[in-house]
Image (cartoon, rainbow, N blue to C red; front, side, top):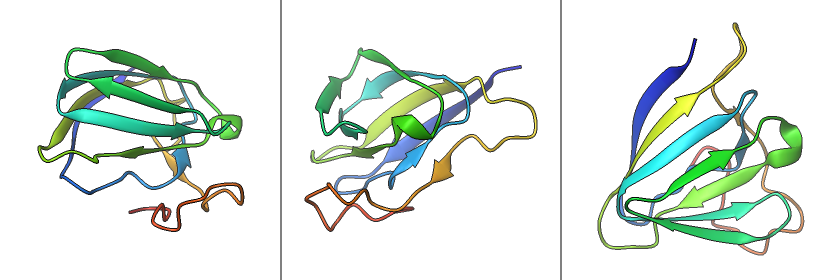
Length: 104
């Protein structure tokens, strides 16, 4: 059974590096979300956009709010029963930003 959450990132805040044990479908309600993905690509999603975060430790990522207004997301998690919705991980060695700390 899916779990649905509303997530708010204040200006300057980030999600910390993490992955999801199950697929996550996300809709951006407001603001601009900037994600750095497992392969170093950066994706920017704005209000009205939707995105999918794939499952598993191969797909680590971090989300940032570099804007001046809150980023508000609605996330629908397909986590296997008994698993957390997200698993924090250390900042990947290839990441160039020391500001991307797990859990912050």
